[in-house]
Amino acid sequence: MKTNFLRYFAFFLVFLRIAQISAQKLDPGNSQVLGIEIVPIEHATAVLKWNNTTIYLDPVGGKEAFERVPQPDLILITDIHGDHFSLKTLEALDTGRAKIIVPQAVADKMPEVFTPQIDVLNNGDSKERYGITVEAVPMYNLREEALRFHPKGRGNGYVLHLNGKKLYISGDTEDTPEMRALKNIDLALVCMNLPYTMSVEQAADAVLEFKPKVVYPYHYRGKNKVSNVDRFMNLVTAENKNITVVPLDWYPNDDF
Image (cartoon, rainbow, N blue to C red; front, top):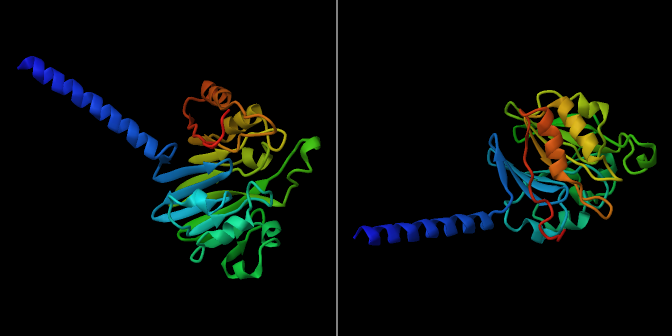
């Protein structure tokens, strides 16, 4: 009798483990911290969920990339490059109820049909939508050889103020003085891909200076290579164990 019980109990544990693995596969890579859920889509594209509000960040990839998430209430676009701005994707999505926050350079590329939805923010501007204050912060290159990629003033990083929490989205940038001067950031999405943005070492050094509570490496595929996210995590946590680094899979369709 005891042997049968142990056998059934062992079968139950195996079944439970299989169920746990299956559940993980149904929702790979999502992360929820401080009430903010981050769903990576690919590279610079993500869906953020907070307080029944759905935010699309740099939506590219076509309608099919967003089939498993709610339609957007708010859309944030950081820059004009194709890995951040896709008019084809915006036109394919159901964005009828969404406000779209963009820098002027992006607004200039959007047809008039979107005009009623658009809020243009320049660096330093802010706008409140759906209980979220969106602050546009500079994103640009510092290295002489990279200045042509992202000139200062064209694109926006963003700081979202979410009921006392602050989420920073770097966009395409190097470790600018404006990034390093950020204060009281709870969550940060930080890019790191050469030659277009910054190195792993630059990103780690900046994070150690502005000290977000939680940092998500994203936008880490560069020219013919992927940045070493493990090295970034080790550099950060070796110096400041109070910063949590959360690595998510931003390239589910690539085989590296």
